Length: 183
Image 1 (cartoon, helix red, strand yellow):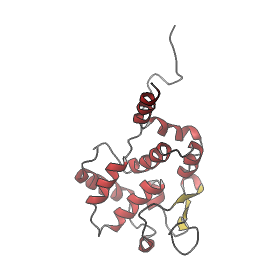
Image 2 (image 1 turned 45 degrees about the vertical axis):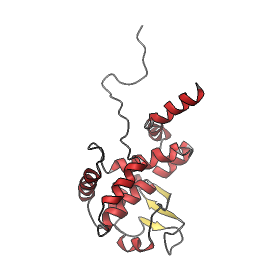
Image 3 (image 1 turned 120 degrees about the horizontal axis):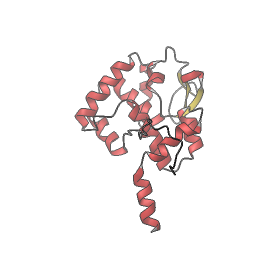
Image 4 (image 1 turned 60 degrees about the vertical axis):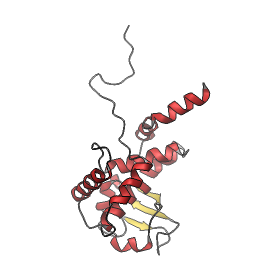
């Protein structure tokens, strides 16, 4: 008798490729200080979980704006995201008040992908990483640090918690550590 896990036979399960905290630190070190677009975009993806389309798709300040109307310090960011879903995300650690001048980001998704590939290669990151790996890193980090999955789902703007559940499998080292602690 054949066992089934309800996965289509041709469907391969691929774990998200997540930028880890130590890799993030290496990445940030190689970005030139003058490349504010890369710094701000990478920070919004890794620190707040924004999609590349939410970062570059903002055509006016209503798309990405601070909650308190004056600055982003110690506050949340209002996002008008994919499928017209509105949500609040945290201000990323490392955010500087002068970064507001650069919003909305005036570049393309392709340009950000190229910048990410360039700087991640210099930093020695996995060549399979994409810009979206920053968002994956945010989600994985949140779950690893004990944030409830339903809150991570809200942070990412997922309409179905099943979409968020993939990140529970992204860090097998937690499973291994728990196993070692218990046995």
